[in-house]
Image 1: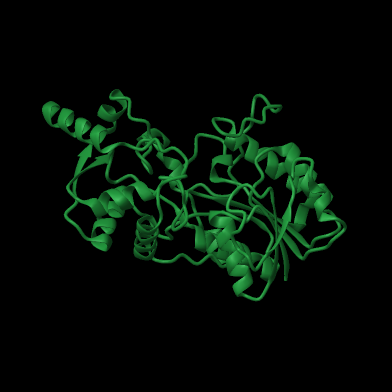
Image 2: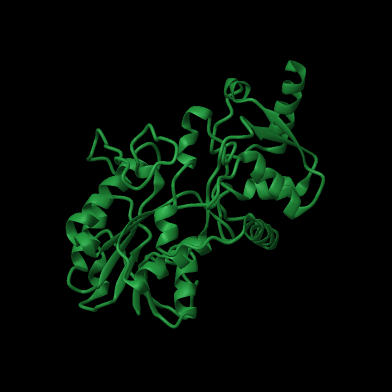
Length: 330
């Protein structure tokens, strides 16, 4: 297969490029050359900007494109239309955040999408992110119809993730000691290893599968308690979990999801209750949680934090302060 990736030099896109090459496919990456530009040396690199700089594609043809970097409908339309008639399938990477709220437990791909009040905004970092992804999906459907694949990943985790969305817990549990554990321990949590997500992209494209799929895991329900206990069992150490209720955390100004990764208040936690049966039936394979935990820790330990995006997660000092105040209250 001749595969074009819009992006592909970092995290899930890079895993996709490397897996495709390992499987014998030929891979072309279109990117601006700004982030990990020398990653995936075996791939062909086209340096251009998808926002007004698509001429670098020339009149070439590919079997499929994976759009890993589409956030603004105007920009996605440009690439979708520029490639029309020159590729066999267009796979757009959307997000579970594209759904309208509230979300019922066990929601599926047919749940309504978010609607933006201001459809002219292009500020995709912030509250408009999900609504813009929904609009991007509509653009791809308009241009490509039944030849499109829409993938809505949940939280993407694993080695090479430069954010602290999952790695915070890996590092914190491995460090040990008293660990502040947020909210209701029985609330569910979901995430997908970037390597499994990349493999799913290849699976549907090589088999000619089309449609819409939300991709996250695990296949069976996982509570926050189960996640943290699995992390301790896999990573070792003497971590002791002190569960602190959400009312206290919110009153203390702790920011769900960012300051305390994976945690959402009970009223918002249904986003981590997605039904992934359609993706599993289409070939999604999920590795064990232990593998993701071990590999993430190994990557964290072998890479310097310098150069990573600024993180908003709890500092050790803030965690200790909150635990002390919780004990006084209790």
